[in-house]
Length: 90
Image (cartoon, rainbow, N blue to C red):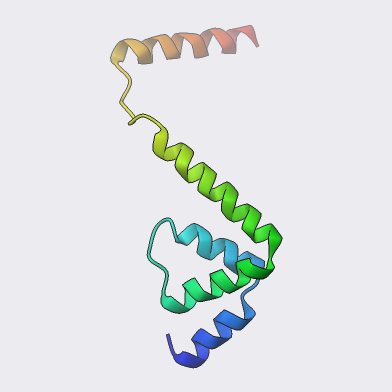
């Protein structure tokens, strides 16, 4: 990223872009300019700080979930039976 683009990003980051960057932060390391743009935006934007707290909460909750295991054939059969019964009931 060129220096002019980096400065523009830091000075003009909007809420929608900040939300996108915050979400991307879970998947990749943000560039220096992106990190600073997000930090400076969060200093002045209460709504985005609240969204950040909510995303952090969800991230921690997901990390505490047990590892996913595939259902056994018996569990699949039982689930299909429950679904079929519900569909028949209307």
